[in-house]
Image (tube, rainbow, N blue to C red):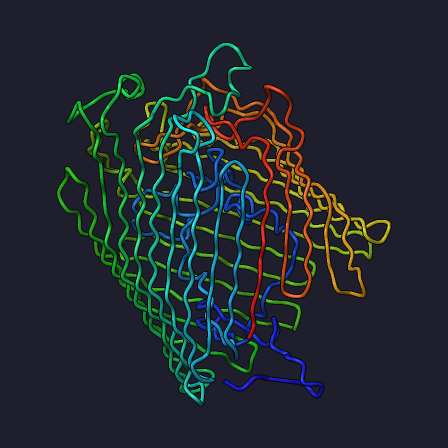
Length: 590
């Protein structure tokens, strides 16, 4: 393709000439493309559980199991596998970026996490012609063990995700198509956590700590083929269709079983020499509907959807489920700054999801209600260490959420309230098997963001969260009362606007609570009252700089760690110890 040049023959390809669109944008008839995000803010937080907008409970290492700290209403109301611990590392169909790149585009990010935690993200995209774009992405996470190693460098996590995609638009833009193939393989060497003693200093031996499991591994492997396409008869009447075929395989192995393994497992049901548990779910999902925009003020959609699920355990018969859905949504732009909308979906089995919202530049308010089916895992399981068969009710949940936003030249404030009730909550109990809480759970979450700018270039970003759980079923939900996230930094652009940089501290504090423990056999977090996570405070020193399309960062994680000290991310799993991280992001636009 011919290069784009200005009057001075300077190359003008860059972040504004390379644009992308998401499937959800297209589905909602929003054809405004996103420009590339070249911000350096939070670049140093490269790990999934640190850079996500969701607050996660982790196992102290990048790539290990994750659980959201705060309850959120599920958006999938039908059957699921029940294996969620590695979902955050999987790129969803909604997260795929489909480019209009004008010129060949490459995005390379390499993060050299200290203590053996490297991560690589590579993306390539180019237009074949003005209507057709192709590209691929590669993501790799490799983390060495942080506790209980038997050798100098022993890998704990190996995760590789690869995808290929294409985006096509007809010349008149009436027909548009998005397609991708995606595969991710996650292999995790499980430790079972450290063997704790009465001496607190023994909690933080890290590499020299005694652990429960030495041969156990978890596997999470997923493949997906996804197609979305639409045809526009008129702006107010468009036809669309999406087809998804996916496969999820979860495995847990421990070969051979050792004396420590026998101490760790509560029971052995099938084999005494090894554990080889596995499950898989194949899904075919087809959705077809109509949508459109009326006078650029009203968007509407209506659809029918079919899901066919084939779920199998290694030691149980195939379970087939077919689900039928009706749904739609609407969004009304009352004025340029006031938007009213809603989304609804209902199943033939009676489960449903509903969300209504109102937004303007000062206020966001929403009401959400759902009735969601129990997972396959919660209802039946047979492996080497557990066996259960349940008939649970669907979980009913409601949430009222609201936030205000107000900005001054030196201060922005955003308080938020989220009030939720949950009935028939499904969880894993003290015996590590699924239970259903028949009593209601009330969750009141209050948070505030307060970002302050002073002395022109100094910034202090704050987010404080207070959570209260009550009701007769409150014991089933374990959430810390307090969480604080802060960022104190100096930001400026120097050398004749050539280099932008940030220098400062990332701050985190969490109050003590009896967090749920982790069971690697079923990849579930379960109730326990034996280990209280102590309150902890961490501070990271970071420096990030950008010159043209090159960004570099330095991060000294857990700078304030004391001798024979530390914190726990999950019972029996110490959080990441002090480490120095380095990273680079380089974008090429021609």
